[in-house]
Length: 385
Image (tube, rainbow, N blue to C red; front, side, top):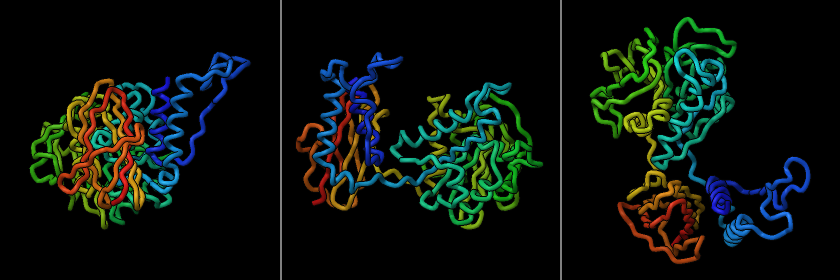
């Protein structure tokens, strides 16, 4: 419908798209697709979809030069998209009820940061092999049960050079040929992560209890977070530190300094748990705590009634910033959006309705307030003073 058109156009633009192609303007007129798929009708008359797309196109055009010069804030958090994990229980239901574990693990880690307005990038194994992770402060490896040797070597280089890596249970259990390692983590990663698997037990909801000396910002000692599927009891190696234990007291999360960086091994599946047990905020806070300890802080903060499903994106240049607020909920939201600005804010106008927007200030951040209706998209232009 017309709202979908506006949503898709602004979404891709807010993520840095430089060109948008709409398929198709005129609907298919023959064959099995002749029942539609166009922005206009078969007789050439306009639809609400085409009018909505045209309206957004005009708004983009009026700001085109500044939009082209603006870029999204670079992500400091990366999530490894490792297709090999689908090969080991990551795609199909299994005896351990891990069905779709890879998909749900990726989504769970992403959602934890999405809900805190922290941008993330999904990175490919070739990014790891090609040493293209320097911009990221932390890399998450959800459900990393099958890992190729060259990716394992790239992970070691990233940690040595100062990066932080959080890997979940059974790290590099299998290599790219499907062969099991003599120890887990495999491929020499036990030394890097400072722990090895002692025993692993199927368990529906293993509980992790944060140690008093864990030192994870925003995570209170004694915090209890549920994971999923397995309890992998870890054996810490000399020099490493236990960050959390399972409810029975056995080591559950181990941290280790290696080179200039840090490696953290989680003896279960946190991302999977947060995606499937959406009400367990502790699992999210634990993942956020790892990121905060690595120096990751959100540039944007959203507060107010019914704002849990409000997404904010920004595009910035040296003289203008565009803010995009998407209310993904059908319910109205009273949003207060606080943004770290690289310069003092001058004139501020809404792009959708071309009206002046008032901007406040709190703790060095620009603050914009907006009553967002259900599904509303709000685009604002902030010019440098």
